[in-house]
Structure formats: C-alpha cells, structure tokens
Length: 164
Image 1 (cartoon, one colour):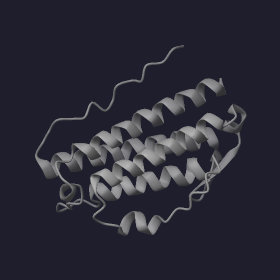
Image 2 (cartoon, helix red, strand yellow; image 1 turned 60 degrees about the vertical axis):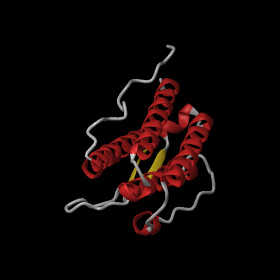
Image 3 (cartoon, rainbow, N blue to C red; image 1 turned 180 degrees about the vertical axis):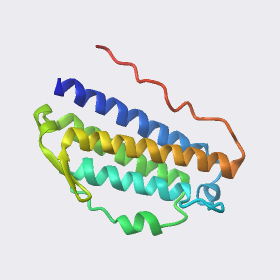
Image 4 (cartoon, one colour; image 1 turned 180 degrees about the horizontal axis):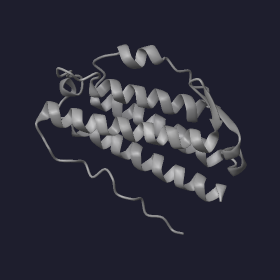
C-alpha cells in the first residue's frame, strides 16, 4: 500500500507544480505578479517563492538530501523576480520533489518528519505539504484574477492519468 501511496503523492505534486507554473505564466507581465491589492497579505510572486522554498526544504532536502538550504525570510522579502525566473524556480522545485519521492523507499512513509513544531509520519507530512501547496495555488489564482481582471482559470484540477 505504501508504494501506491508514494506514487499518488508523486502524481499530485507533479500536477500541482505544473498548475503553479501555469498560474505564473498566465500573468500578463512581471509587474502584475508583484502587485499587492488592498487586503491581500502577499503578492503572487511571494507565494511562489514561499512554495518553492517550502518544498525544496521539506521534500528536496528533508527527504531527498538535496543539500538545499532554505532562506525563509528571503521568500517573503524578495521582490521583482520575473515570471520566467519564477517558472525556473518552480522547475527546480519540481525536479527536487520528483527525485526525492522517486528515491524514497515506501517504508520511509512510516518514519517521522519534523514540520514546524510537529513530528509526524512522513505520509502525513507529504499530505500536509500537498494541501499547503494547493491552498497557496488557490490564493495565487485569486490574486491573478484580482489584479488582471481575467476570470479564466488555468485548468488546474484535472486528475492525472494513472495506469493502475
């Protein structure tokens, strides 16, 4: 069962990171992804930097020993990164996540991982990270629609094909 669960996590993270990239590239220009409308806690670019740092830290480095060192403060203070650069950062995060999950023995899902103040099973940590990613992608989608006036989606929630 753990092997199937690990495969499902890989598919979901790949889908969500593809959606994240599509959201970034749907902004009409670099300035709009950094716009901060009244009442919005974060610009779209900030959400992208945060998500990439979060996944590279917990999955890439934490489970895959990638060597990535997170700078969480920079995730929230950096401004002006272009859409192309953000898309590249997403590519790196997706590659690290895929490598880590592909190399992770299924038995490790029952081991523990530290996320914030909590020590939880790896499988629950991956579920948390996937839901955290999806939550912020929803915020990014809303931000893009708000700042551009474009109500079209990017085709986010399709289920990935799976050969079972």
